[in-house]
Image (cartoon, rainbow, N blue to C red):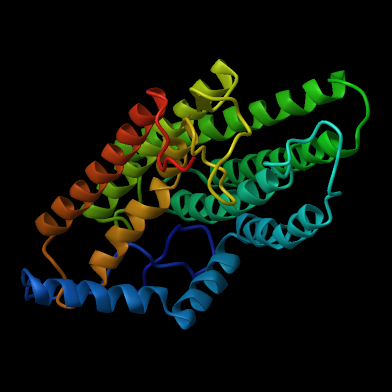
Length: 323
């Protein structure tokens, strides 16, 4: 990951900042074919190298300690949930043996860990007042923490609580839905700001800005799919929820599963901007036009994957039919 000397993210913060959207420009454009691919591969290895990752997270923690540490905390609770899943009694009344209740908190903790880190970076790219930046960070941190707490509480109650559905169960479910709506509102506001070019031009070049717009738009579509699942009361089409599914993710293998399209869409905010960043690290660096075209092509591919998996699920067809 390249660090540009003398570049700051915001005028009223510390001088030490993350640099993540640009690379030193080279006069020679990238070649096509095999040389282009090898340059991309080298840039990918460099970007994902452990030393680069350590430097990235160290600087992220210095710039945004709240969301940075939240991401690590969420990652850290995964072993706890995994231990609870492993210690689940072999036979619990009312529990579907196909689905361990602790798997959902594990998946959401991993997902929100990457979400917190990604949103932290996207917020730094925005040109907004300092108080709005602090407010967005705090609201996201609180909403994510409450959602994970709610999911864990629901998992625990599904195992150990006696009796039927109670007012507390309804409250926990409503809390989860409310936190999702809060996060969606913040991301929607960020999308509007990206479309209005309210970004630090010294940090976000045109290919990266396009990547941010595309990825956040796809993310919001994924949230809409999540809302559709809540509205219909299930995520499986053509079969009951909790049936046979793929290991860990439990995507249905006997019916359509809307969670697949949701999963691809919400992780577009990591996939597309990371791709744009790697393009900017290539040596020689592709032209702006080439990078914008590549970013658009990837965004279209991700969007098509979301659409195809959604239609497939809506038709009641599993991604992998294993009977």
